[in-house]
Image 1 (cartoon, rainbow, N blue to C red):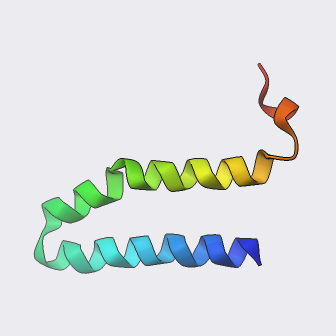
Image 2: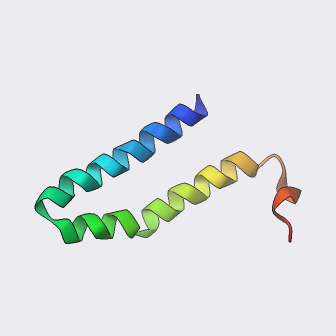
Length: 58
């Protein structure tokens, strides 16, 4: 179920950028690379690795 939620949110962002890109390609590019996308990835990684904090040690 968590995977489907992640997939849905990610697809929504991609579709949003695609729709905006048809009219304003520069704005769509900014949305695609802005920290929002990086923040979502960090949330996914935190949620997946929250139970095993020692997994990310160097």
